[in-house]
Image 1 (cartoon, helix red, strand yellow):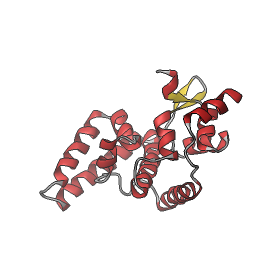
Image 2 (spheres, rainbow, N blue to C red):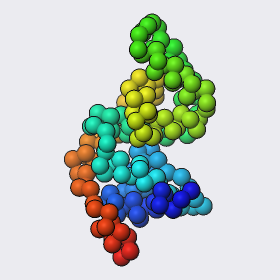
Image 3 (spheres, rainbow, N blue to C red):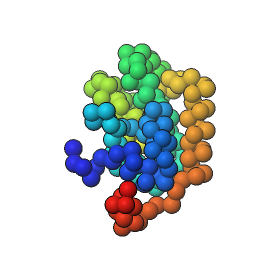
Length: 178
């Protein structure tokens, strides 16, 4: 893991122009993926930057937030979430017996067969392949309505308040002063 690819909560907070507590909250709600290094959270720079200046449109970004919340459920109960996704995948195949949708359903089949790590990557990545893959997601119904509404509300709030992108030189100056 290269240091420049991973940020601390403080560095992520500077980029997001928010507090460290807000960054931790995003992580705990499954809206910002992170890894634990010892007892400290680290997040990928690309995931933080995707919240600041998304390379996705609003709908794609909202879908990413919802799928990150699904990832939180997947981590808590992998067997149940993967079983529900497999059932939904079979239902989608019956609904779309032919056509282009099968290509994406086949890709989801392959991701599900690779296990939890591959599914988490597909759910939380801002990479183009994952954005396209989530369009035909088999994870509908995984989030209870209240949780789904909370994620959509949090996304809408974030969308309204999102910060302007910070020039790299200014970010480096701010980091040196912290």
